[in-house]
Amino acid sequence: MPSFCTIALDIGGTKIAYGLIPDSSPTTVLASGRIPTQPADSTAQQQVQLALRTALESAAAEGLQPVRVGIGAPGVVDTATGLVTYAGPTMAGWQGTDLYALVQQATGLPGIATNDVRALGLGEYTHGGHDGFSRVLFISIGTGLGGAVIDRRTLLDSPRATAGEFSELVAADVFGYAQRAETIASGSGLTIYYNDVAAGHVPNVGEITWRDLQPTDIRLEDVAANDEHFTKILQGNLTGLGRTLGAIVTAFDVDALIIGGGMAALGERVLTPIREGLTVGALAPNQSTPVVRANLGDNAPLIGAGVLATTNLD
Image (tube, rainbow, N blue to C red):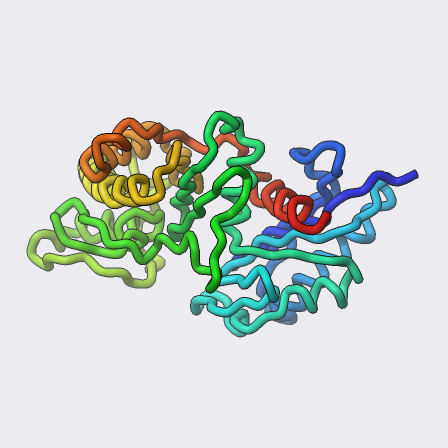
């Protein structure tokens, strides 16, 4: 007799990851794969359905029976309706997508969806070794910046589905200018800062603002670990982010701040300035709040989509 499982999807701007999460092993991802999100000959919506059908068809070979679908998707995702109510310019035609209709058409199964970073945070909190914390603030510092507030394995209730959109917080950068948190601290933002500083645009130009990355921009992975400009920017910008997050930590009185996303791979070079900023920005009772790195790895978004589905659809 097949064992029950969840079809899990992690939808991104460039790829859709999919897999099967057995009910008996919620951190295991089977029959996983990836397909492009926006190929020239297909829409993102068609690719979502292709990923769903592929996962569904692979279940029998794994001895599994899918009974539900969990999705992490970019943009503002209304979990109650499955509608993407807001999406940025990187995914043309994504805003207005009815994810639950796509799930029904492709699989006939019940589905549930949330923002991709919210799913990532839920997976990390639930299965990333953070059992000692009842309420956490999760921040993902990757290409962009987002997060989640999770209380006892439940995402913070969000009437307009925007809880966790921390990109629009205001934080001080290395030069003392007030900026969007995503502009100063995301991987894209730090790349902009590094290239403008390395080119000698600061302090003559003054405030650095968001712009599209250019092919000529030096990528952070190509910057030496001891590069003077990068070290200064990383320390200054992330201290500013930490100070702002200290106020959020205080306001929500969380037990821990968990840092995930691609930039978290830098370890203490990221965590230390955030801790230092948090100590300044938080009230005294919250200044010792732990700042820890995410542990779950690359499958965290799929695992989180599985947690979302089993928690809400069973």
